[in-house]
Every structure is written in C-alpha cells, then in structure tokens.
Image (cartoon, rainbow, N blue to C red; front, top):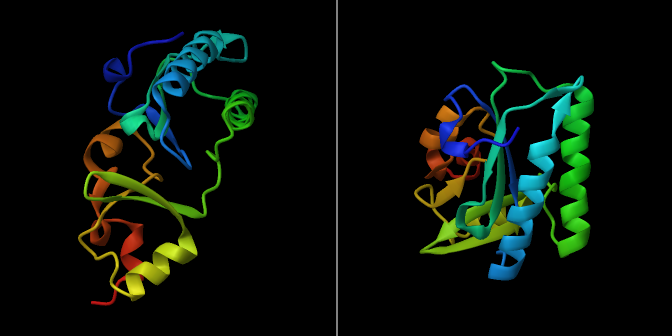
Length: 162
C-alpha cells in the first residue's frame, strides 16, 4: 500500500538507490509513476506493505517501509531489487552498484567510483567537510539526520587523514 513518505514512522526501514546520473524531468516523472505502481502492489506473504518513496535531488530513489505494520520478507525484498533492476535497464542507469560514492560539490551532485573518491581525498580534491550521502542508513530517522553529512561524520571518514 503506497503511503506518503513523510507519513512513515521514524523506525521505517530505508533503502537508498543512488543513480549514476540525475533524472531529467521526463525520466523523473516516469520513475515516479513506476515506483507508485510498484509500491501500490508490493506485498509480503500476501499482505500489503505500507511503503512510500521519494526521489531526492532527482538523483536517488529512496524506499521506506513501515515494518511495524508488515515486515518485508526475502521474497518481497527480491521483488524490490528486480524492480530497481528493471529501472536500470529501462532508463540506462546504475542504481545498485554499492562501490560508488555520491557527494556534493557545491550544489552539484557527483557520483564517482569508490577508488576515484579515495584518490580525490588523497589529493585533497574533496575534504573531510565535503557533504556526502551516507546511503547505508537503515531507518527514516537516520535518513533525516545522517544521510547528507560532512564526510568526517560518516563511513567516508576513513579516506581522510587527521
């Protein structure tokens, strides 16, 4: 069952899919429609899942699930991954590669391979104060408080010497 993302509880489980490129307006509209349709039908063991989504910066797909109502099952999580894979193919995007870092350079969002980000840190092209997207947050409260943070406040801190 599709619910507005902002109405999900703070404990809602979160999945973040950073995109290899920004969605243009047409792509964003199509992804929005596809996510709405998918989450409207998303179930676990025949029970509707209360889930919502947002597309921050037109550069991410973020799913939230109220697991207090009904928890996701292995099969339902597999279904969501297959759905994201279908979006990758349909829109020629990379959404599931966890070996990339997404960060801000001014108002521009960059998506770089982890090795390139590490090299940028070593050459001081990015700093411990660079705003990074901590895409491993697990719940909505952490998403709201710790998703977009300076690198030194996230797992990215390991790339910066004190």
